[in-house]
Amino acid sequence: EVQLVESGGGLVQPGRSLRLSCTASGFNFGDYGVTWVRQAPGKGLEWVGFIRSKGNDETTEYAASVKGRFTISRDDSKSIAYLQMNSLKTEDTAIYYCTRDEGGATPLYFDYWGQGTVVTVSS
Amino acid sequence: DVQMTQSPSSVSASVGDRVTISCRASQGISGNLAWYQQRPGEAPRLLIHGAYRLRSGVPARFSGSGSGTDFTLTISSLQPEDFASYHCQQANSLPLTFGGGTKVEIK
Image 1 (cartoon, rainbow over the protein chains, first blue to last red):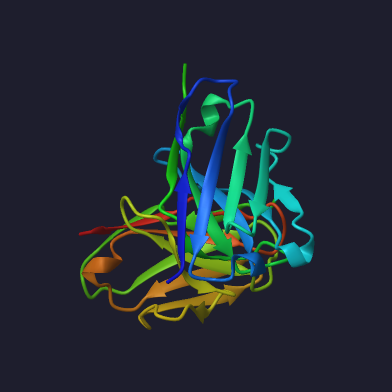
Image 2 (spheres, chains in turn blue, purple):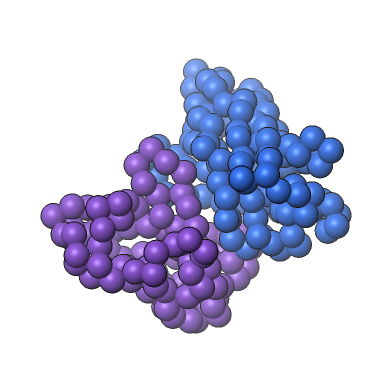
C-alpha cells in the first residue's frame, strides 16, 4: 500500500525556519517526483514546488511565492522528501501536503497524498 | 501563469442528481487537466487526469471532458459520499495551478 506521511509542522514565529519531512512507503520512491501542495485555512490548493526523481537529476521547481525561501530535497535511501522553509511569513500558514507526482521529469498529477501537516506562522 | 477558474463555487444537489462542474483555463492547456475530490478534513484524491482518464478505482459515475480552455467534471448520479469539494488543476506549464474549488452540498 502506498503511503506518504508528513511530519514537522507546528507553530513558528515570522522570520523563523521549519523543516517538513515526508516519509514514503509501498512503492519505489526513487522512481517518482515529489510535489508539495499547500492549503491555507478555508482556501484552495496551491502548488508549492517539485523535485525530480534521481534519474532526472533531482532538480527542483518552485512557485514564485516561495522561491528563494523554500528548498525541496530528497533522500532516496530513506524514502524521505524534505521541505525546508526559511524566512517564514504569516501568509505561509497552511496545511502542507506531500504528494507522489506521476511525472518523474515534469510535474504532472498527484496520485497519492499524505494526510498533511499544519504550519502556523504567527507571533 | 495559467489562471484556472471554476464554476460554480458551490452547488446544492440531492442524491441521484446529475452535477456538472466547469473549469476554464486562461490559455490553452491541451488535455493536461486533472480533477481532485476533497472531503472535509481529508487530503484531496485524484479522480481524473488527462482531462478524461478515470483513475483506477474511481466510480464510473465520474467523467471528465474538454480540451484547450474549457473542461467539465460530471457526476452522473450523485451519491452521499460525493458531497465534497472538487478542484481542477492544469499540468500544461509551470507553475502548476489549481482552480478555486467547487463545493457540492446537500440540498
